[in-house]
Image (cartoon, rainbow over all chains, first blue to last red; front, side, top):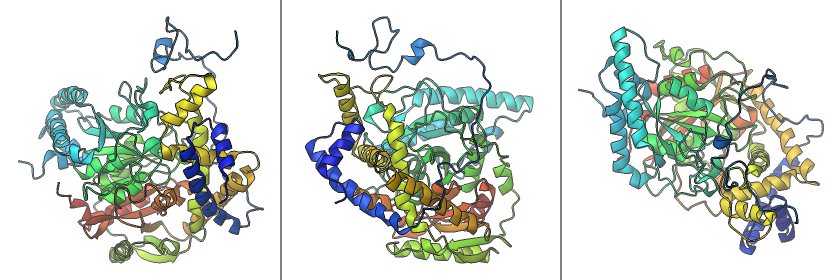
Length: 98
Length: 495
């Protein structure tokens, strides 16, 4: 097993995913299996190689610096799970104490 | 009288009949809707059929077709043709779920660029097709809204993640479709359903408005009933888009015109058969179909060369580190604040966030977020993510070398025909192996397509053809020649 239960719980917290105890169990086993398979890459000496992040030649694609209309507020808020009563703001649970 | 039923038409043929006034768009659209009513209870290819809107659009198309005939004008190439769209591509005012509870009620406020382009070419939406949640999977079993069944064998998967689009075409519940392909999601379902699936070169087609999975790999691709249709749809959707900075400004030839020379000879075309794609664990009937296809290409005049892509076996672990890493970053946006589901749970803003994501995402999506978060986390970044990016360099180099020697590469598209529903769902690694032949091409950025290449025990087997980046025309020519001198693509499942 390349991963422990504690590590998996820690990763879940980094990813902000609520996982049940059962899910953490099965995830520990499944992720370990996948990572063990990924160890195949250690057969390769890649020290001298440059990493490939993108396969295309585009670099620093610029657009003209023009002011264009953005989405109307009503449209932008259409899919929001919660807004204030005037539908002007997205609403979330309080993040600051009173 | 037509020799084929309307729902069996290809896009090219339907568009021609519409232009000539032989059929109307309303008739064609109705025929598809009736077919969906008749068989989709068994298949579940669609998540949402937009019948009313499709008929309204069809009536408008008929009026335009009539005016064009009257005025002697040429209408846009797909005017009046209905399209089936994978439900990960945004359609304005039509719910787009990505197959996820998270986006169950999400209604995009704009169309993806590919939808704008298809609409401008005259096509109209008929429905949104099922997929693995957020396009992560190889069987469509990861959809939050139920599995899609393979029209060739209802107890088997149609492949994935674009399984709904593939099944819709195989069952004649659509004329043409779009899918997306990150690690084979257009090609592998095509392989399992006797349809055509084309993954364009990375940068060829805009992803603006496509719900992101792994941004250095995602591409939108045509899914069709034959190669000519794949060329036509690619003609419509290809091209640089100022809203997607990863599109590349490369000239796109007229792909369809390239196939209309009538010449099916492949004299002098160098076809490479990569030896690493003949693996243990490949079904015997798949290997037999591949060898027969190579022999057939030779009879058409092609030269067959054995080629080596020495880092092939590393594509799978490389992909399953890079794609989840990118997915973990892309899916961080689902916080239940701006759009999407929000869990109603006591506690503070963090409790809501954890619950929203824990309940909104399905098992495979969570697995990939976890894997990606780990591969990117402090202390493991170099060992996993950076290592995989360096291996990607080797995989790309393999293809660069190969295309110095040959024009196209030919392999199987999937190691086995369609597997049974439930067979691999609890074993992620076994499921990932279903993508064995379709992971390296996205890592290298090259185009590839899958066409019908035979049958084994009544199940379709797909043939994959790959070309150098931005050389889609060459692979289409080889695919077209093979298709037109075989009859696999004309076979239909009995439903």
